[in-house]
Amino acid sequence: MSVDIHPPEPTLAARTEGAAAGSRLARTHAMAWGVTIGRLCSLFNLTPRAIRFYEERGLVSPTRDGRNRRIFDHHAGRRLQLIADLRRAGLSLNEIRDVLDEVDGDEAQLKRQVLVKLAAQLQALDATRRDLVRTIEHFAREPAASRVNR
Image 1: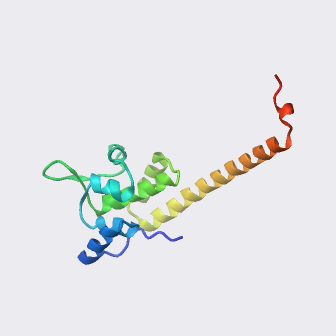
Image 2 (image 1 turned 60 degrees about the vertical axis):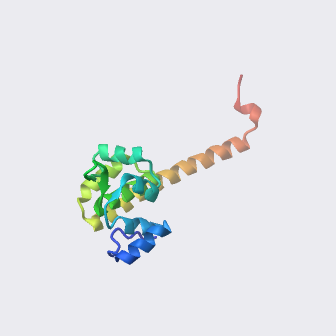
Image 3 (image 1 turned 120 degrees about the horizontal axis):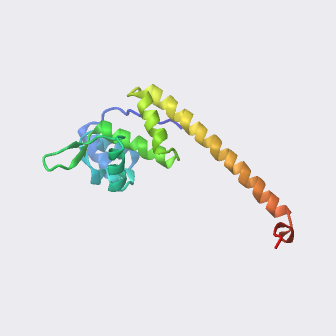
């Protein structure tokens, strides 16, 4: 599966059509202009509290409008999308911060670092799965009476 970090800049017509679709493409197109925290919540299936938490941790930096509302530009939206995707993949905020700090805007390096982290996460899950299968097999073979000594 290939992940495109920087899609081509959409036209206004494409942004308008895409925003109505509610797909990943629509999320990318919505980031072409500033959006509020409420819109991001619906785009990325996050709570306002989660987004504010990421802001407090320095992972994303919105600007403020005249009414002091958070406004997320394309860069902040893409970064938030990456954070949300990596959190769902099981990476901790510290791991995500490390990746973001290491790459400093270099998209090729970002892809490499993310793939390394996700591969490590997958290896850890595979090891946990093997342990669970062995434990299940052990308990399935052994009679119940011999397992518990009262």
